[in-house]
Amino acid sequence: MDRPVLQVALDFVDLERAIEVAGEAVEGGVDWIEIGTPLIKSEGLNAVRAMRQAFPNHKIIADMKTIDAGRTEVETAAKAGANIIDVLGASSDATIAECVDAARNYGCEIVVDMIEVADPVSRAVAAEAAGADYIAVHTAIDVQMVGGDPFDVLSRVAEAVDIPVACAGGVNSETAARAVEHGAQIVIVGGAIIKSEDARTAAEEIKNAMVTGVAKPTTLYKRVDETSIREALMLVSTANISDAMHRAVDLAGIRPVINGIKMVGPVVTVRTYPGDWAKPVEAIDIAGVGDVIVIDAGGQGPAMWGELATHSAIQRKIAGVVADGAVRDTPDIREMRYPVFTKLIMPNAGEPKGFGEINVPIKIAGVLIHPGDWAVGDDDGVIILPKARAAEFANRAMDVLEKENRLRGEIQRGSTLSQVAYLEKWEKRK
Image (cartoon, rainbow, N blue to C red; front, side, top):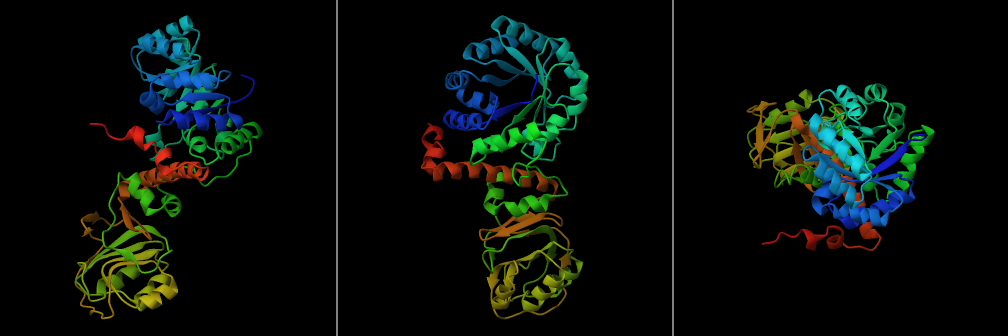
C-alpha cells in the first residue's frame, strides 16, 4: 500500500442512515466502507448488497466478526458484495484457515481482528502465516469507555508482520496521525465520522491529518480516564448521563436555586438532622477544591444552608452544594451565581447542634451515595455517578451527546424526530 487508507465504520442499526452517512463520508475522502457488526446484525447481508449497489467502486468490508462456520460466513458475505470479511483472531486456527480458503474461492480478502486477543502480536504472526491479508488492531467500544488505548500494541503488531495493519477504536482527527505514525496503513474511524453533524467535513479533517501528520484538535470523540472525568462531565447534561446509565434516576425533588449553572465534582457526603447546620458547615473545611458537598438532612426544614455558608464554600473553591433539606438566603445565592441544589427553600434556620457525620454513605431519594462518587447538576436536576464507574459513564454520556449531535443535524436539514429515530420500524411488535 503506497498511502494510508481511511475506512469508515458504519456502526448503525438503520441502513437508511448508514447509506446517507457513507455518501457524505465518501465525499470527504473515505476510501473504504465498512458495514459494521451492528448493521449486519440489524439488517443482515442486505446491508452489504445495498452498500455495494450504492458504492460500486469502493472496497466494501463486512465486519462479520466470524468465530465459527468460517466458510459459510465468508461465502455469503462475498456473494453479497463484500471485498473483505472480518474474522476474529480469538477464533480457532481451523476457522481462520477455513476463512482464508473460502476467500480464495470467492475472490475476496480476510482481515483478522485482534479485538480482545490476549497476545495480539503472536496471534497476528500466526494469522499472517495462515494466509490473512490484513490484521486489525482493535480497541473495543466497551474497553474505550473505561479508558483503553487504541495505540497500545499497534506498533509491535505492525513491526511483527509484513501484511497491512489497520487501527480501530477511538480514532479521531486528533489521533489519526498518531495511528499512521504507529504503523497503521488502514485507519478505521467510526464515531468521529458517523456521529458528526457533517460527515463529509469530519472525513476531510481526518484524512488531512493522516496525510500531513498534523493533528486537528477536537473536544468530541475522545475518551477520558480517571484523571480527566471532570472535563467530560462538564460537556454533557444530566439527561445525557441518565441515558448513558440506562435511564438512571436523578435525586428526585432536588432542584437548582438558580438556573443556567453547571455543577460537577466528586462528593463529600454529610448526614445531619433537619436544621442542624454544624456538620454541613464543617464539611466546607474538609472538602477539597472542586468537590461537591451533598447533605442528607432528611428532606425537611428548617434551613441548614444559607448565604454565609455559600460565601465560605466559594472561598474554598467548592464546586457546589446539594441539600436534601432546606436552604435560605436564595436571593444572595442567586446574586453570587453559586450552584446550590435543594429540596426546600424557607427563611427560618435551625441551630448548630453538631449531630451527624461527614464522609459516610447516605441515601437521598432512594439513591445510595458514597464519598468520592461524582455529582452532576444542571437545570434538570442532579445525577450521581458511582466512583468505580465514573469514567465509564462519563464516556458513555459523551457517546450519547455525540449521537444526538448527528440526529440534531438531520432534523435541522428537514427531517423530524420520529423519522430520524425510525420509530415505526423499531416499535415493539406483539
